[in-house]
Image 1: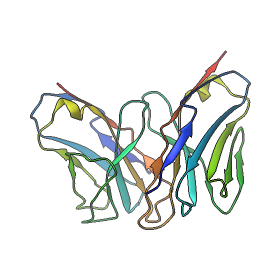
Image 2 (image 1 turned 120 degrees about the vertical axis):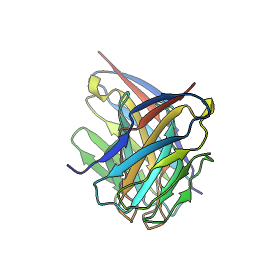
Image 3 (image 1 turned 120 degrees about the horizontal axis):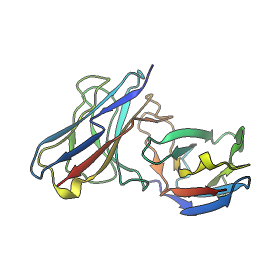
Length: 112
Length: 113
C-alpha cells in the first residue's frame, strides 16, 4: 500500500548526539516536506524539497539539515541534539503541483 | 507570504449538535483550501478540501464553504459523534510547483455525550 513511512516513531536520546530521522514514501510523489509540531499544536514547515538534489528552508528556522538523493527518501539530520529540539517531526509528500499533502505518522523526539 | 487565522481554538459541543470552525486567509492568490483532522497521537489526515472555483463541497456529515471575496472558509460538521473529537487544522495555498501550505493554528473539538 502506498504510504509515507517514518522511523523511529519515538526516540529518547542525550544532548550532543547526532540524530537522523528517516522518511520514505511509496506514493510516487516528487515533493516532500518536514514539519515540526508540539503535540496538538500548530504545524511549522522547516524544510521541503521539489525533487532529487533540491532542498529549501521552510518558514521556521531550524538547526536541522536535510538531503534528497533519492526521490522516495528525505532524511532529516540534527548534528548535535539539544533539549530545545524536543518535539514531534512530521514528514509529508505531495505531487509536484503541491496538493494534497499526505503525512507520515511522525517521530516523537525527546532530548535529555 | 500567506497568513491563515483559525477560530475558535477550542470548541465543545454535545453529541448530535453541529460544529463550525472558521478560517481567514490573506493572500488573494491562494486557490486551494484543505482541512486536516489530527487525533491524539496520530498523523494529520486530509478530510476534505476545496478549490477556489467552487463555493461549497460536501462529504457526508462534513462540508466546507469558501467566500473568496471575504477571504474566509469554514468547516461544518453535522450530527457530531464522539469520534469527531480531534484537533482540526485549516490550510491555504496556491497550486503550483512552488506551492506550500500555510496552516492555521488548530481547533481542538471535544464532542461530549
